[in-house]
Image (cartoon, rainbow, N blue to C red):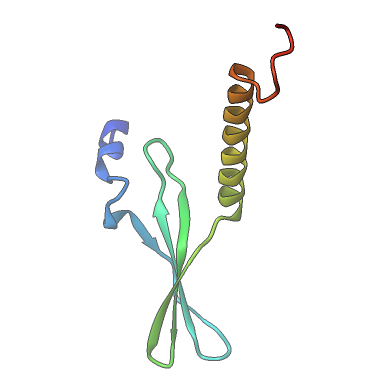
Length: 100
């Protein structure tokens, strides 16, 4: 299978790109099944999406949260807002013009 065929085999949002792990049973009787999504265009790695927990016949979904991505998003927003504020001050400073 060529690289182009592999790239076209799965679409990024396709449900067939999900990978389910082996069910693991915990001491309290719960069954945990991990779920991952196959990587994007050029990556073949799987990213964790979350887990299914089956306990007493009830299945619950717990999504995986990437704290690093959330922190990077917050830092990016702070950097962009600081840059925009600096540009606004440089273009029209809030202090009075004393050169006249």
